[in-house]
Length: 83
Image (cartoon, rainbow, N blue to C red):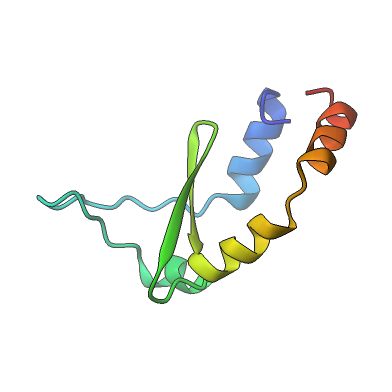
């Protein structure tokens, strides 16, 4: 779980694609093309809060993923992970 320091370090090291972005006067930022491609961002995007992080998803991919999520399955997995 991400409450574990070693797990957070692992995620940062192996999955980080961090990029610094400037925010314009309207509060917008440009997502670099390599990250847009990796996330399949085309026209519409969804920003979701995940604990202390934000994730940016292609809207249709997120909708499909969100429909797969079962509250009962998540509860079972949380128990197995000790959360």
